[in-house]
Amino acid sequence: KAGVTQTPRYLIKTRGQQVTLSCSPISGHRSVSWYQQTPGQGLQFLFEYFSETQRNKGNFPGRFSGRQFSNSRSEMNVSTLELGDSALYLCASSLEFSPIAPTYNEQFFGPGTRLTVL
Amino acid sequence: AQTVTQSQPEMSVQEAETVTLSCTYDTSESDYYLFWYKQPPSRQMILVIRQEAYKQQNATENRFSVNFQKAAKSFSLKISDSQLGDAAMYFCAYRKSTYMEYGNKLVFGAGTILRVKS
Image (cartoon, rainbow over all chains, first blue to last red; front, side, top):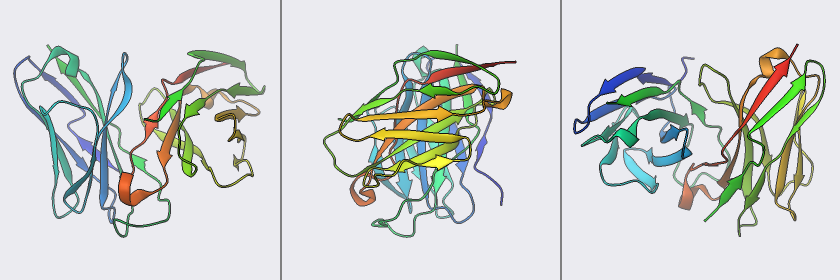
């Protein structure tokens, strides 16, 4: 089975631009979560989507948004980029059968998208 | 809010020796999951080991084992017979157990860089 894929792997943008990152989960996985990793703030949760609905959201400004499509692929968008948005953006997918699944399902991470804002 | 603390920014171990990475966490929940993730230079996050808080028995996975002290809110990772391939950043992470309310959100510690000397 193919793993979680993220595109593009590397991206360079300038301040004020917007960017869209894509995440394709493992086939059959319906939950996709996004994380931002920076040297200063570490790994921080951005949001999670399940069946096209945002399940949970971290403490990020409204410039960070996301969505999930019917095939479970997810995109995240950052508008009006700032220098501090330079980071590795990781997505993770897991197999959830329903929003109230009581059992644990492992999250599998993608390789990340390295965003550099100049 | 839950917090995870890794007080060792960097650790070194000789090949074939044993090393222990420390992690403490803070939560008011009684049921949750704790994880150790490995992030090698490729940046691909890999799950090393998982512990359910309701289980008293410490989890083990081959050369990796944990010492889970629930009352002390401590969760350390022991790597036995260290190998060069163990060199990576190790993250301790916490997740609430009730998926319905909280989803898959992981709270990560700052990480510990593990160097393995030959």
